[in-house]
Image 1 (cartoon, rainbow, N blue to C red):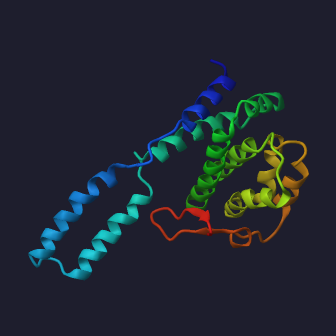
Image 2 (cartoon, rainbow, N blue to C red):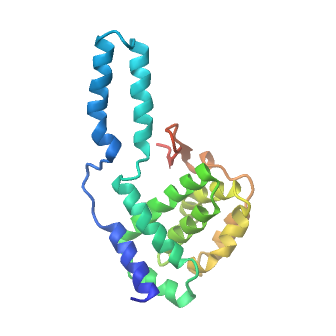
Image 3 (cartoon, one colour):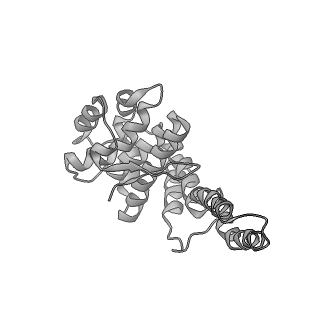
Length: 216
């Protein structure tokens, strides 16, 4: 299997439909764990406040579980985008041409998750692969300049917290952008003081990872 075929295979694996009820190990443990705490509460071992704090603490961990299906998707796309980092222009075009709307949507969502992980870990790696994913997702599409900036803002903000910065990040991967939007991408990368709020995003208060989400 060639490198291009491997990348496409991983992307398609990640884009396969999953069940709507996505659960991880902690989800599966939650009901029994809370029953145990309620028994202690009824026995007078813990009071109302302590019970609520235990439940709140447990639920905070539900936001990121290593065996959760979303993380299986992330793992496949991380492998694919890491392989894609050094693709030549012709190979980029080849890959972009086989992506349908469902795959592009998955890549776009993944790019925001990468931005979130980069903020959490101060990770240049997640900025790199997140930007590659986002630019691949829109490589053959016509996109309004404002919509483009909105979609790139999470990665711009994340890159601000790394050693390379947004300008270098966007320039490094500019070949993944269609030639019609390359100048817009470069210009946005050079902008100063880009914030999430300015482009309609916010950071959740969940733990252990604070995810970037659309501000409704």
